[in-house]
Amino acid sequence: MKCQCREISEIAGSDAEEYAREHLIKVRVDGIAWEIEYQCPETGIHWVMDFPCGEAHGGGPPRLRKLNW
Image 1: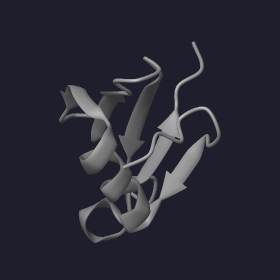
Image 2: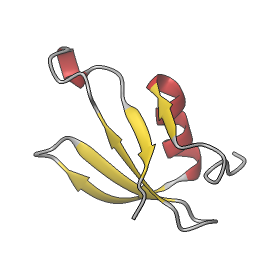
Image 3: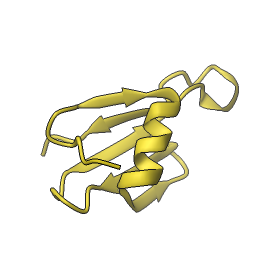
Image 4: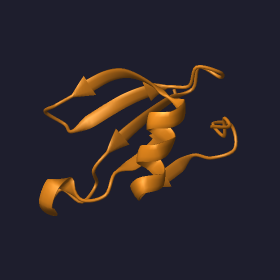
């Protein structure tokens, strides 16, 4: 998958899952906060996947957001 880490800042739903699975490297899993941190192997940019609809079954659709440190 082509790197789009410089062009995008947030992806949701199945697109977020696919981008994380096909392009990013998993760095850390926080089971308490329901967050997964990823890093782009090409740019070094860090991302976090969370589930902002906590009231929905399974946390609802995922959201992948670029971390701005």
